[in-house]
Image (tube, rainbow, N blue to C red; front, side, top):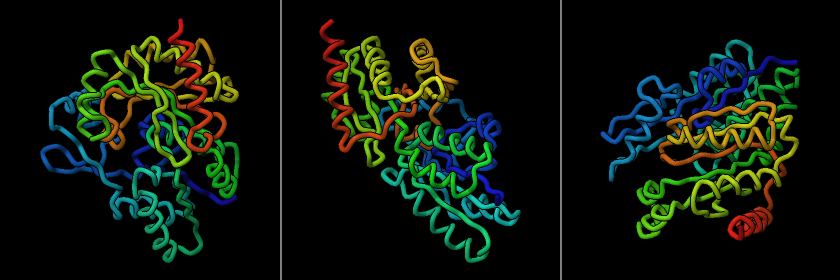
Length: 314
């Protein structure tokens, strides 16, 4: 079996502790453009500011961060040192529905393989982002630790990515106004009634809203019921709860997930800067594995309609 490593990009939101635990030796960092105009490589371990500082800074009327793909030199540096050491590379990266990262990494890989023709690099379009990509990455790392060959892990990832779901709330509607996803009128009245938007991944790799509920209590009920009807073998899974400046909500949701599903492990983590710049404050979601999503999320939307109707009738 050849030696190989798994190298994701910074959109996976795996912190240093998790990267070390699952033997992820490197990560290609995207670019973060600050509101004052300067740019830096993504601060993947919150060394220059805390998550709270980052998300609180977005409260200003016109304060927005922007992101860009990992620069070519960053990808080359991270990939080439492993190629030189005789290691092949599997690189699960941010969904092509959201970014050109896959194309950029694939182009770099193509050029590097001219220099190292005896090595292999496979870039995987994860069709996921943030903690859903983290879940895919650690799944690959665990397969590698079990002794799976390079080809086995590549094949596994191409199938497994469709099984990763998210279900949670987004409650900062005014940030969605700033990014053009919700109009101001809807945001104002949505915030007045405590509206929470619930979403899952569609087959194109986009997070698609499938329900809106008033108040966290009902939203959390819907989350748990939805997971119950879509999850597979929860007691054998590592699940994530990711949040963007919603720590208390994440803890409450974690209690419900543990009580209902007793997963093998439940990890709470913050959404990092690479995805957080677009997501903004207000996300609190569970990431887990289940059956692949139906076309257009037709089954999932019908299921959520039944769940929300039941909640509203009580």
